[in-house]
Length: 552
Image 1 (cartoon, rainbow, N blue to C red):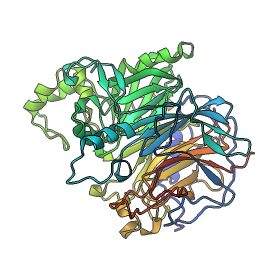
Image 2: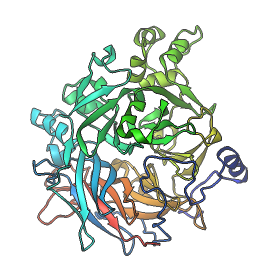
Image 3: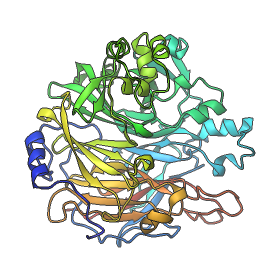
């Protein structure tokens, strides 16, 4: 089998089933009028990304390798000064979102910072951080808002004089919203300190940014902060530094990202993944309806609604509510499900209100029948047919070594439906040429862009040898190359590529190069020195702007 061809389960019967349940068995390569998805600000009217490159081969080099004619500019790297106040770009850069200020060539770039390592903290002795290291950990995680622009020579640059640029981090205060605000579950807090472990995210229909707190426990413990104040979806406005919220109605777990769209009746729907083994897929449906005229006031829709978890065996979205949890716990025949490490009596004492349900969401979701899955990471709503794509990165305890991409078809193409069908759209492995899919984005020609997340401890070893460094792949979903995975980029040593995001005219792709040199244990002998700045002896994570796309 061609190693660059996906192992697809879309046989004749499955394709017919997909067509029956979703209206389209394959994507048509043009936007559907029924779709309204928040992460695609250019509206799919440009069709800039065409035909379009000669795929590269896997690489083990300490370089960001791209196809011929493409180039990249480093627009912001770890420790770069981003504003007149001297604030510095964070570490572990992940999700990116771009908001134009002047057409496509000047805008605000919002970047998440997931975690810190030896390059910011220095050597850690006996797994104990000093107070200075804890302060750095809180500072360098979180988010950055930067202003960037393309100069007359076509080079993307950082503008350190920006009036918008700022850091949001472990010292920044946030207002809580939703059922857990002021509750006993959060020690009666209405405001909390900081955000950290920010992995992926998403854009709202009112053009703010949602950022997801993922592996928060370690940093919270180091800083002696209340863990229940972290693990939420936060919201910021790139243009307004005073606007900062944590939305508890969306649940507390190891959030990977959000994907927001509109139901047929105008209600807001938010899909979310929980990035750990044996974790669930969620969606939230607002009680009220989206009103474009209300602008940012629509954020109140994220405070009052219903949280659901996917039961894949039944093809149903099950409510994660105090009523549903109480009903389960009152059953005489209750068998505590796998993954819940508490007795029935302990659970009955824990869950009294919706505040406890959202605070201990992973456990509550399993109780009501959520299906444990294989690290659900990025989720994207197709703007072409409203099907929902989920990266299940991997789960070695289940033998799912290379992961897969799941595609959900909501009943009636309605994102608010409580019934669905699904397929394995694609599986990672030798036959596809990549392993461990992580982040997704569509371009306006219905190509699916996929980055990979092979653990750095596994790079170039065992069954991962053929994939070499982590990369970026393009998968056409229509046309003669439909279903063929073509490698577009290969990251430097020890890195992964994260947070792909296009400019509105699709002539530039932003992407983060996360944790190059991560396996370094001795700063005098780094495993990577990317981006190879003159005189610099360490590796630096960075956001790059990739250009060279043909316009057509």
